[in-house]
Length: 400
Image 1 (cartoon, helix red, strand yellow):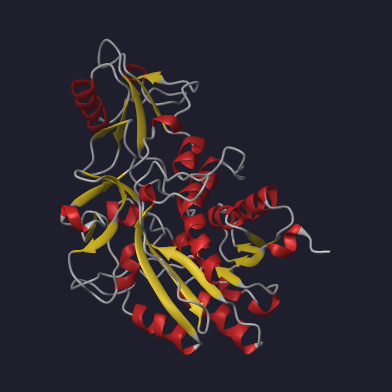
Image 2 (cartoon, rainbow, N blue to C red):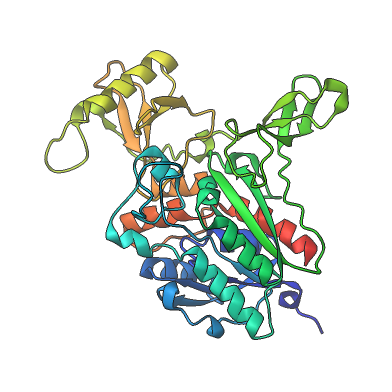
């Protein structure tokens, strides 16, 4: 008699972190069997949410890949050395995180950061060991920031998978544009490059994003990507290097806007906020920075009595609750909820909580993060949004 678990596709997960890819793959019909990460909080999170998964705490650089259980899919999101893409100092400085903090000049350059993710070569090493053992993975998948494709060794890395017997597939997406069944799209703009290496001989993988979009002529449609430049590696961000257009010829393939979710429904209105005049939380009075106060004042003028988000990042100001927020990062929260008052000093403010940021990442409230506040922030910010993981997993499952 066949059990329910016999119909699931087994998967191994390297650098499991906050378990976003595990949640997404499990939602799409996979059975996570193995999870590894060097951080105790990450391993504890895997064990708390996936008690049947073999979770191991170890630096993946020295993990014996021969000890991984047999699985059809290997899931992992590597990082590369951060270098200047063109000109400037090309000497490796620090490893580039999977959040957009580096692009916002807020990256964590501490020496510990070099151990937060396995490198791209560790993922290749796992694939090579499986091939040599005669039990190759059918699919090896993950994500990275778009400029991962600017890594000088990126083409060599992709070619190495090809030489091992895999066909490469790449696609650029925004988490705000991808829904996966019951998992709605993220109320967060998060630009990523998704990759999948499918064992040669299996059906062709379709990784084309087709977000539900609004066409000014045709109404609701499934948009198709149109790139500014036709390059071999289509790695970029929405609105800068690609847009979506209507699939219908009758309107001339007009530009369409993907339907997105607002951050409003992720807000926990029961959490306390404090007046701006009271200063930052703590035993000793510390006033908010002048730039923070300026942004709060700009939001009051723009939104009146409506709550809004002040974005504590360079080159960012405020935004409405009726749109997605910017990228949730591992370096800390940059999103401040502001509830306007009669005066600037009476405005109540607080930073978004770990749970609110987890909701922006599409984690269910039943998913619990282990560790202290700093560790949980890192786990949430570094995670693959479950909705993105599920979207990718569903397409991989179709060829398996």
